[in-house]
Figure 1 (cartoon, chains in turn blue, red):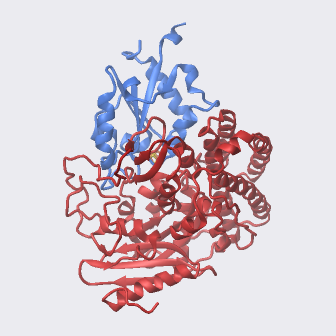
Figure 2 (cartoon, protein in one colour):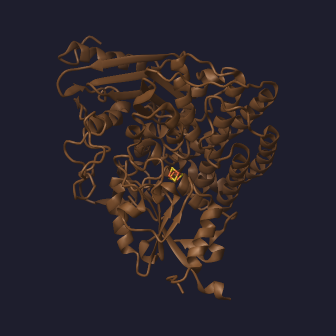
Figure 3 (tube, chains in turn red, blue):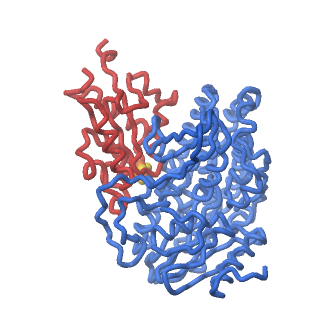
Length: 139
Length: 487
Ligand code: SF4
């Protein structure tokens, strides 16, 4: 029964991805992965979120917007980097308009999900770990 | 034309020759800025040749084409932002890629540009163009969104329910990919171009490989060519399945959306098993020997055909769904032509152009451009339906061919490759061109002009006059990738 007590509400921000990471996140909502059955869902406002998922290397134009969204997530909160770009080891790491990932532009993520892009299965497994991690904000 | 457009005769002929290409029905492939006050325009002629025009000038400004060729308006704004070259007489010269955060003297594609500029500590928003007057409301959306989508900032001027004007501020995803590609050795390029855009990756990979081969004077063995067709068409199906599933979601037709996504997922899992990647990144190179499991691909195609016919019945017979799509987000043929629309958006407005009819790669196969003429959401939906079916047909032809040809070649480009070259392909989002300058086996300049880049101004026009609530539907019917145009 404990499983029903833990839900994880996510807000996503694209900070310069190539859109494949987004497509894999969207796939989580399809019936093949059905992320909602685990009590995980995407919400429309950061104010309703427990965690922020970031894709892309954090472009300069998205840096301020990303910081504002992060600021709007109520505490306790979790920060998740999705994909190599956000993790700081993607192909456009050193581009002039890139800030080299979430850690170097915002703060150290609580969870890094590597892959280019990570598969939906992998993302799902990792998010479920976050759900059950010690200090989970939702317990 | 007998009047002189510019004081300087070379400027005058620059405008005239480029207009002449347009009047002859040629397609603009790319307008590329190069260091040393140099511009090149490349056109794909109706017979499949590539024509090059160039302009070199003194002083800060060059004669703008945009008044005469509106489709060059974004290209010139981008050149202005990235090089600092001023298009004289541009009707709307305001920042496209640049934001107020960029240092005033930072022009990333110039030689002396900082590799990491000192960004100014201000907000990144550029002033918007809005309609002023009684009863007009301005609604701003983005750059972050209430769903899982790419970032873009849209400023709507609305009156009652209806959109009067949309000012799209894109390039939030501008990473600086063209600059990243500069100075790279050829071997480093494929991984980068694969990731310009997740939806059109194969098309970008193909353009690079085909550019190198053109310059080196190589013709890939037939087996390798059929393999490339398999990849390009597999990608088209993947991308169209995604877009076809998204359109019903825009009107709340969830069954069609979920079943469409299921077809896409199955296709993607199949591609991963056969080619090694769910988005076909890093799959196309000079000599990809036909590693793919052809029987596996045949089975995958057969299983797609089965679920496809059921799905088609579902969407074809839902009258309410078609009612919702008809007459919404209309692009007139004349506007599509004037703005240089590409791909699905152009074909849905009655422009029967598909670059595959001219690509040497497809010469062994008959490709009929898909046709529709409503210019609305319905027409764009119908074009994709036709194209999935024709891609399935092409895949089957190519699969029969690969079984009779085989290649064991190994080819590497010469390590001192130098020169300028343009390559193109029909990506799932339309005509996609790369203009590349090589110098001693390294990239000196890499310019990408994608289908999405051409179509954003067309989308802005298509939404005017429609209800605000229909914006998501119209947007989905174009399904333009941001990363392809923002780079
Ligand atoms: S990690 Fe890979 S798939 Fe994800 S945004 Fe970056 S390049 Fe694209």
